[in-house]
Image (tube, rainbow, N blue to C red; front, side):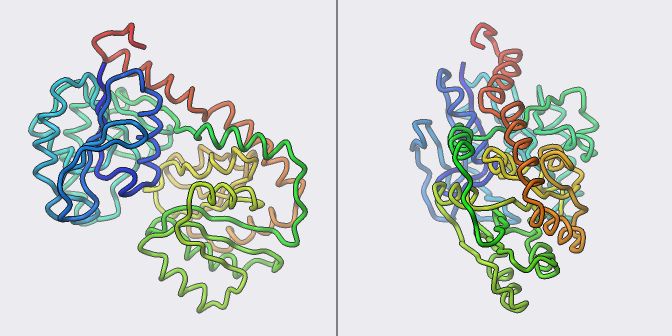
Length: 376
């Protein structure tokens, strides 16, 4: 059996949650023949074949980038050529170049679409793009989503609900292992409560809301650490400086080792996202693996299905600064509640979000669609 995964950009050129899922799937299917086909992250870089973590990656030259989309004629040509022997073609949505490949039937094998997030950022382009999306979903043999909430929130997915299969994302084995080791140790005593944000600093992450909410907290003996980089980083740094938030620290991009250390050092994670473009947020289960409560937002997506309000953390309305400040104050002032939510969070990860569970669910779907079901 051959599995070919398609997306726009991949490690190490660019990462994020989708790239992490691609890597997890690739690692879980090492007994299959595989290839990942993506574009180069910048114009002018030549097409090349290489490997990442032992999996072949074909990177196509791009002509230009528009609306976060690398355009590449070479990508279309190579998808047609390089999927000729594929049994499963896994499209990590959204990437319009792949929708074009589907429209012109430039692929072979069974098409599976993994719907990672909605495409509402460029509102003026949505009416133009939607027909292509619905054509792709119509052609797909199966549509994978990370949570039921993503189906309910999307008019596109609701039309094809009978094709949808829910496969939650998973936490890396490292987080599960090191989280267990961390929780077995005596907790360190701290001088102040540390609040953590981890993520790409892009429009829908809501860090401006987080900064204003932090300024409104009654408990002034807290610090806020924001981990990650992206196009909004400088704007949000300037906002923190303008508001004279001296107990706020931006780390910029960090290594995986440093991210884990930041999770260990925090008392709880805050995910203040403002749009259903945030469909799941892997960082939630990464923090939960270390027994950290999560404050998230009640988005019409899978986000509030991951960390449960009143069980593993607190859920507030998006863009509600006062509600977010109150939630942070509540966790900051109640250590026993943090411990209770944290214990529940770890249990939830063990029950729902392990790699074995995710890969097993994928194998079941791919096996049902593949030519040889005995390959499961």
